[in-house]
Structure formats: C-alpha cells, structure tokens
Image (cartoon, rainbow, N blue to C red):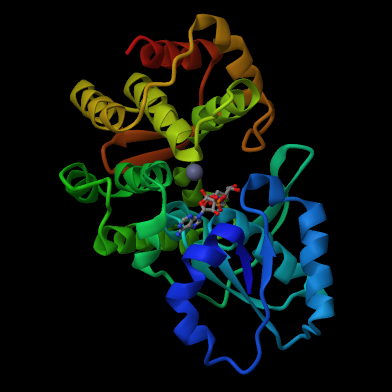
Length: 319
Ligand SMILES: NC(=O)c1ccc[n+]([C@@H]2O[C@H](COP(=O)([O-])OP(=O)(O)OC[C@H]3O[C@@H](n4cnc5c(N)ncnc54)[C@H](O)[C@@H]3O)[C@@H](O)[C@H]2O)c1
Ligand SMILES: [Zn+2]
C-alpha cells in the first residue's frame, strides 16, 4: 500500500479492518505534497516494491490524494511492465477527479504531469468518511471540479450544488460527480474529443495556478485557481459561445462567493498569456478553450485570441 504521512495517520485506521484481512501486505509511506510526485520518489517506490518481493500478481493500493494516485498509478503501471493497482482516494479532488479516468503521472523539472501513462486502476473505492479530516481549503479545491461537472454537462446538478451545503458535500453529490467524470472518460479515454470538455476553466486556471506557484508564498490550490479560471472562461463563453448575460452573472456570483478573489492587474496579463502559450493542450500555437454554450452544455475547441483572453482577465480582475 502507498500512503503519505497524513493518509497513514488519518485514513489507514478507517480501513484497517479490511486491510487486516489480507494475507500479506506492506506499507510504503512517502512525504505528503506535490514535491513527492517526481522520478526520485518513483524510484523509491520501485525499490521498495523489489525489497518487499512484489511480483506480477501483486496489487498496489494507493491510499491518498491525487499525488498518491498519480505517482502510485505510474509506478505500478511501469513496474515489471505493469502490475494491478487500485485507488482509495482520500481528498475530495482525488475522489471526483484524479482517481477517475486512468491518467497516471509524475512531474519533471517543475513541468506538471509531463511523464505518465493512461492505465486504468482495477477499482476505485471511495469512503466518504475520509473527508472529515480533510482541511476546509482542500474541500473547496475538490468542489471546483464538482461545480465544473455541473456547468459542462448538467444544469440540474449545478442548481442542486448551488443550493447545497458546499462546505461539506454529501456522499450523493460526490457520487454524482464521479458518474459524470466516468461517463465522459469512458466515451473518450484518450482526450480526442468530449473529454476536452473537462478542461473548462483550466486553460486560464492553469496559468493562474502556475503564476501563483511562481509568485506567492502561500500559493493557490488547484481548485482556487480553477475557480478563477472558470469565471474568466465563463466570460469568454459569453463573448464567443452563446452563454447569456444572466448565466454569466450567476456563475460569477456563485463561484465568486465561494472562493477568495485572486488579485492581479493588467501588468500580469502578459505573463499569464506567456504561460498559456506553453500549455500542453495547445495545438499549432493556438490557445484552445472549452466553453459553455449554456449552463450544462459545453463546446470544445474554441480558439481564443490574445485580445479575447485579456478581456476575460479584465472582467475577473475588475470584480
Ligand atoms: N490523474 C488525473 O486525472 C488528475 C486529475 C486532477 C488532479 N490530479 C493531480 O492530483 C494532485 C492533487 O491532488 P490532491 O489535491 O488530492 O493533493 P494531495 O494528494 O497532495 O493531497 C492534499 C493534502 O491533503 C492530505 N490529505 C489527503 N487525504 C487526507 C485526509 N483524508 N485527511 C487529511 N489530510 C489528507 C495530503 O497528505 C496532502 O497534504 C496533483 O498532482 C494533480 O496533478 C490528477
Ligand atoms: Zn482540475
């Protein structure tokens, strides 16, 4: 089993009664955080698997957030040309997003997820109780992906979410988000078409996330950056894809009310644009966004110009 020190402390006891039924198991514990999602830690995991005598019949159980599922999935999918693994996601983000869809990976030289595989876990087991020990900021981080699921596929779900207690999302809401992500990735496992809709908010959101990582002492979480990105891309949707003014206002008020405003001004736009140009989702140097034609409907492959992107950033920064 792969854990980090937080999931070994908070989550392992919750599932201990099941684990103790296994004939033979060992624990590999790594440091918590994105800094562990690299080749050095992966080599460490491979070496521990060798030390513990893991063979082709062995199973790796990834107990943790997205760092553990990405790293553990990658280590398992390459060890002895691939052994089975299951995910037991313990953060809201990993439950509704990272553990579903078969993407594994590690970072290299601060380039996120640049090395990886598409390999499906044998199963994903979600235990809602894990969320009780998760810090509020981490809950909000995962919540951004749930809001995105409603915005891109399901207006009814968006309405349900906006009227729910979002500081403490219910197991039913988590389940519904998993269903949405699962349906999209089954239809398009390798992101040739519909899976790109999951990138709504992420073209600008990733740039804001990277910018914050480079400049802030206490950088934004992924979800906080995506929340800002979704407001910007809702504005682009309003400019280019038919999202009406009323829907734009609603998205701005709901998301703006949940997440702290990230302050940046016009002097940062060139840097943000430079980061967007390097995004691995781009093709032929054009910046592509997945945009909303209405709440609950998404259209992929919208090329956005520099002027349009700046206008959407201006909309957000003036809020
Ligand atoms: N593969 C994919 O499709 C995909 C999708 C989205 C994100 N990701 C990846 O996921 C990673 C982010 O995932 P994350 O936000 O889960 O980060 P994380 O794994 O770093 O977890 C966040 C923090 O919460 C702690 N933690 C985990 N579960 C806990 C619990 N139940 N109680 C208390 N503390 C707990 C962790 O130890 C860590 O300190 C990024 O590396 C991102 O690239 C992958
Ligand atoms: Zn995301």
